[in-house]
Image (cartoon, rainbow, N blue to C red):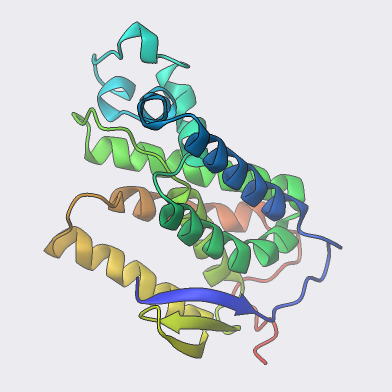
Length: 231
């Protein structure tokens, strides 16, 4: 990850508190803590039962009965609340914390929740279509948060964001530069090599969904590409 977002100073205008953003973070953290308490084998079983398995979603592959927790199509929602490691969770929640509050403000809390879930579903579908025979479970909120990142880019591209460059150097950069750097890295890994541990198509699918959905979900009168508070 080239830039890790830390903080922006883009104040809320319409809502008094980012209830959905904080609720999503709280649920993800709570689920992760629960995952750590159930043990390795049980945790793997949850990943298979609630993660998106492309070969089950679009193919004929079936899980053993003792691993089935829900219908394959419902895993397009459940998968985005599971994480494989602390850093997997922390990275996704940091992006959601920095960018989610202003996107929620621009939509309203309920609409933001629907937007977030739709971006996550689109990410799961994109990953599954790109890996249609895979029996490995997809888990994590990165596709949904990619949609939030895309929405922030469309709403507040010129707002300055504090980031850690290469996880070491604090810098204050325009949001458009941080976010476009992130999406460029996704395509570079996609076309020039990745170890397969990162669901790149999920990131790209969630990002694309965010671009498409933001004009529909934003408040009436909320401009796109607004200046925000560049400070």
